[in-house]
Amino acid sequence: MAPADTRTRIVWDYAPAPESADHVRLRSRYGLFIDGDFRDPVDGVRVDSINPATEEPVAEVAQAGEADLRAAIGAAREAQPRWAALDGLERGKYLFRIARLIQERARELAVVESMDGGKPVRESRDVDVPLAAAHFFHYAGWADKLSFGVGGRPATPLGVAAQIVPWNFPLLMAAWKLAPALACGNTAVLKPAETTPLTALLLAELCQEAELPAGVVQIVPGDGSVGAALVRRPGIDKVAFTGSTVVGKDIQAALAGRGVPLTLELGGKSANIVFEDAALDQAVEGIVNGIFFNQGHVCCAGSRLLVQESVADTVITKLWERMGRLRLGDPLDKNTDVGAINSAEQLARIRALVAAGEEEGASRRSVACELPDRGWWFEPTLFTEVAPAHRIAVEEIFGPVASVLTFRTQAEAIEKANNSTYGLAAGIWTDKGAKAFEVASALQAGVVWQNTYNHFDSSAAFGGYKESGFGREGGPAGLRPYLRVG
Ligand code: NDP
Image 1 (tube, rainbow, N blue to C red):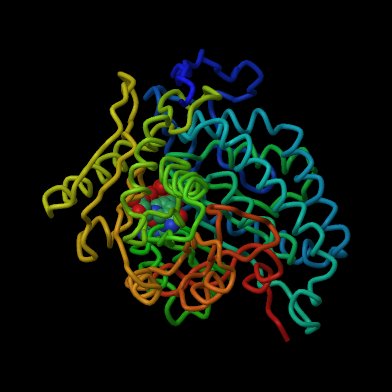
Image 2 (cartoon, helix red, strand yellow):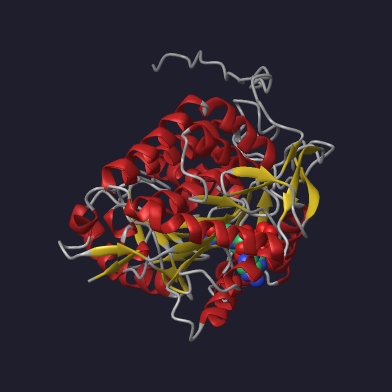
């Protein structure tokens, strides 16, 4: 006779583990960072940057006007020839300094990132900040080896780079843009997103601390109209943009005929494909990381979950059970898995698409969790019975919402995965190496992960196909967009 099951079910309760914000050295007001100093806007305005978890202001920030943009581009132009003329080793030293200063102030940067943007501090601390430092370290090493990065051909900088970054990875995206541009001898004018300007402004302080020559980096916060004005101004030699496909197309149209090189890192609707031979528990962890990391505010989020029909019920059951253990709440609590939605506008977009999913007939389930009284939140949500034509299977939701589709054969999985206007990333879960390589080479996606998801490395290129954009960031491929190659 089998022994009686004496196990009792343990319900884990977590005591709050809030990260302290006492060590944060935030000013109450920030100016524009132009020509090595913070200054008041000439014709811009001042607005509060709001904490999405509390709806309280974090700090007041200046936004640039036309005259400010002119000054920023002027300072960048003035500084560029001297910066480019520095020996590569010298430029590299500045980047190494910035990288080390990011590490020194890592805790503070992580806390501010979570206060300003709403992401769990565990993610800011373990992903955003270390990866930002890694990008500066990586490109510091390239600064004196540029021609090796482009096949031994002569390489010169383009000039002044105008760079626009979104709100989902504010510090990391600033690092992705600034580190290669500077390593190559360009100077930069960077516009952070309206809702998350603070860590870029702290990065400006680090540039001062590193004694980076004045004019090499300008940080000019502002809304979309400031970004639109920046790319239309004369005096820029390169534009790099990360954000939505619709704005990417607008920028491309604005640059048409001007001969200004452009890189676009745009949206996605990435397929995360689970084959029946995968290690399913491991796959479920990867699915969770793929779609609930940073509340799903991730361009390469695994938002289309393609599961082989034979294991679909098992995967959905395991996933739903795992979703029930996600902790949503205070981004500064180290136990939090899902933080706040970045803005009221983004929350409205998520709600509209989720409502469309229900109206079109997909089956919705959302984790029952207590939402805080203030701030912007959305429960982790799973849609099943999704048809390929449903809006939730086609459009980027950019929130903690996964849409499950099923497939029977490998060919069908590939066809469904490629059935998208986007082509940013994909995941493949299988224990057959040959199958993973075969599927990966048939997928129209810039990044394909095997048995993992949302893994980033400063030495690996990242970028898209189709409406996910063009150009690559990271690794030696990330040098090319900032160089004129002979
Ligand atoms: P946007 O593309 O509007 O924002 C990205 C950046 O571009 C921000 O700095 C923004 O400024 C700026 N910007 C806005 N309009 C213009 C313009 N006409 N010319 C130049 N720059 C501009 O994305 P949203 O913030 O509006 O998000 C909308 C949707 O875009 C999301 O729901 C998501 O689907 C997608 N998205 C994709 C991202 C990605 O990494 N692929 C990142 C962010 C969003 P400001 O913030 O001040 O408006």
